Amino acid sequence: MDPIRSMLESVLAEVRPDDDGAVADYIPALAAAEPDRLAFAVVGPRGRVTAVGDSEHLFTIQSVSKPFVLAVALERLGRDEVLRHVGVEPSGEPFNAISLERGTGRPANPMVNAGAIATSSLVAEGDAAARSAQVLEVLSRFAGRPLDIDEEVYRGESNTGHRNRALAHLLRSHNVIDGDVDTVVEAYFRQCSVRVTVHDLAVMAGTLAFGGVNPVTGERVVREAVARDVVSVMASCGMYDFSGEWLLRVGMPAKSGVSGDLLAVAPSQFGVASFSPRLDPHGNSVRGIRILERLSHEFGMHVFEPH
Ligand code: GLN
Image (tube, rainbow, N blue to C red; front, side, top):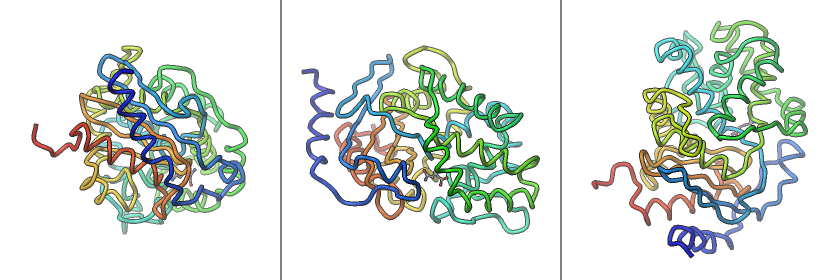
């Protein structure tokens, strides 16, 4: 067996018995997730993907969509215009917090829900279906294959998303977003409901790690400066109110989602993704954190480690 695959298999075997945490249960479709599912994938600079565990298993991308939608906003509008709508400061608060800047109403950063709803409003036009199709198209280019939406998860998000709706109305009241609030929120719910595998997420992470070029298809998806900006925001804000400790322990810009997915970037080296549905109190995957911690140590991937 090749050395990378056997290394990934051994990490998987090590974390597999850990059953700490609980699956997200705010919608039935997520509550029904099989908690023991476990998968892990990396992609290298020449686009070689190594995936182990349940690597074909599909799950919804959830908050891991946020950095990619931020990338689209930066690509289209430029950094200054994006920053007029959303900040880039770690909030130190949970993902669904009402953390809006006093006076301006600007959300703290694009990795918490309020900020993600703001960036989502910037990247597309038309009704919710049209917006969703545009976002799906770009996410698919990051992944290198056509992605689709889990309609059941989408309906669950929409039926229960009162807090996200409230956040969006607050943003609308501050003119951080404009237009029809429901259109923006429904498009955001659809964005969270895009179906992916760890293989897809590793390639998406790789596209950020390699300066905006998808390492598998060779397509430039966003400018190098955009990829750098997105990775920077992930480094400070990607793991919610665990971001500081994550940077200390793992040292890889990353983003997590409530389905139990986790994506991390080793700039110029690797795109990495894991999936394991049980979450800690911050909403981060328990075994996902352990996997990335091991990987970072094993390969010396901490961004501040001298090379
Ligand atoms: N759909 C979820 C929400 O907006 C995504 C949050 C997450 O993955 N942390 O509440």
